[in-house]
Image 1: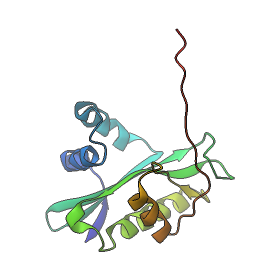
Image 2: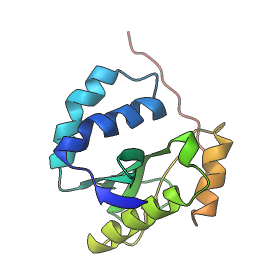
Image 3: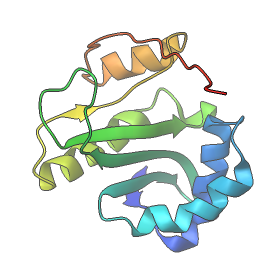
Length: 146
């Protein structure tokens, strides 16, 4: 397995994995926004490659707004992480988070945060196995103003 920063030529593989992680999102919009994401200094996209196959990705960004459970700003935030089912259980997520951690340290931040849906117990277990600790649980509400 090899961890590498995503380049423009790898956008199709990255977007395919993003679509697997977020199947309800607009796949065309994800493809259109990808080049701009790679150009941002405060964002990172890492890919895991096994031979010619890209089997996983991690997206991270520096967040300067308040991040739940954190004490500093900015905070490095794992915006998304996905490992294909056939590559799971082999340390791929751990290697990606190690790469994100090093990037975060290089940016001078002292906290790495992430989130997961309340019912995504597999993600909770992965985060705990990678050294994250749960800080709080939140339910968001919305009210339309007609």
